[in-house]
Image (cartoon, rainbow, N blue to C red; front, top):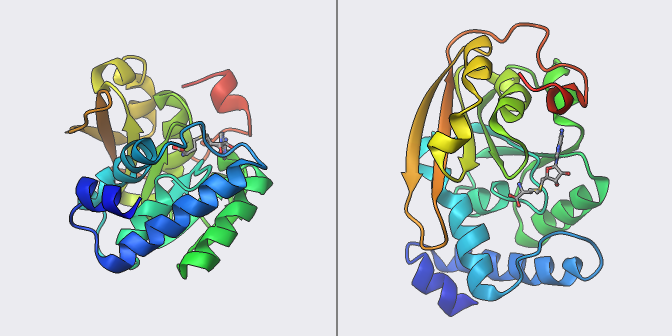
Length: 225
Ligand code: SAM
């Protein structure tokens, strides 16, 4: 695992390598008792989970307050935090078991992050969190019109929703209404990869989100914008 990490992500410090090795061990161990990931083979984990998660690094300002919405086993939030411990990371997921796993990962790796067990819809209506983040990152959680409703309300004006996706054109096909009503401007970045087409869709919020969004839990996916 260490050699694979050094070959695939040569910029990693020894300390970051140690943390990724420990994260991998926990992921594989806990995966025998709960459903965390279908990807377990070392090379695939390094490329499709660890390296893929780091794609947003250039778009996160020093000390940025970041929400990882639907983090699951911690992607992309934990790899970002390993490499950038300056980030003020909040990991959000609706499954309590996964939050338990993430707390063990944070403690074992000696990382600081907030974990929140919540539906993103409720999280985004909570005045403690709404309009308070510089960035929201999210991977493999929902189609774009749904995902924008879950993430954009969390952002300060000027903040960025960074959506990890496959083909950007395909993903944006049905998102123009959501992009418009949530007052966002989109920039797409293609991510070099040898494991399929990957892109980041980066939405900058340019005005406050109307109070009706996000709608109550379940509505964004039943009736997408
Ligand atoms: N982001 C991780 C990754 O890339 O491996 C996990 C992806 S997994 C397919 C989707 C995760 O999103 C699950 O852990 C699920 O519990 C969470 N999720 C889905 N809808 C959610 C919602 N409305 N609010 C919070 N979490 C949600």
